[in-house]
Amino acid sequence: MVKVKMSATISNKFKRIKLLLLDFDGVMTDGFVYVDENGKESVRCSRRDGMGIKMMKSAGIEVGVISKEINPVVTARCHKLGIACFQRISDGKGKRRIIETLAKEKSLSLDQIAFIGDDVQDIEGLSIIGLPIAVSDAHPKIFPYVKYITKRKGGDHAVREVTDLILESQGVKLTY
Image (cartoon, rainbow, N blue to C red; front, side):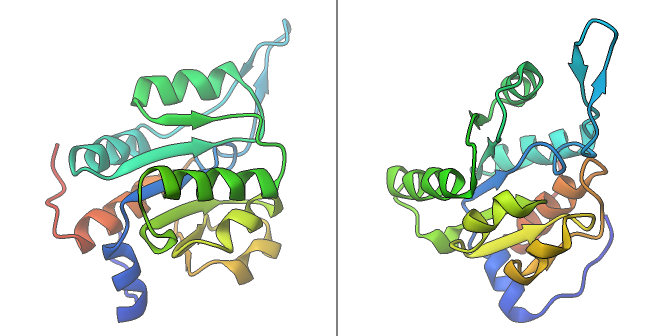
């Protein structure tokens, strides 16, 4: 992992996280979709991100995906990782409602939630939580709404970068 220097304020935000939410396309993937001649879609995901998610779950930190589209690829990846999956969340207001609902259901403050996004539909969700994060290749319009920008691009181990930072800040040894 790349060592990241961050302020004490940001470090404290990582320490508080009990729920990590992720956009799918552009965060867990590189943002590209591959379509074969039969119209079947596939995407590229990072196995390191998957390991980071498993370590988070082992440490008692929940992880979930909030995605704009209903897509069997999203369902399959979330099922394999054993994480919550919210699909057909068509706009930023919907993402915000999901975050607020999850906070209430899990008795969490919004400061205990991190969300990683990559595009303008994520702004509503990013604007209400304690640790809003963007992948380094996100749309520039979301950068003013985030407190941390990953060194890695979406689909290129950016989620793992964040999971490692959360776990390390909470004193969890990075093993599985």
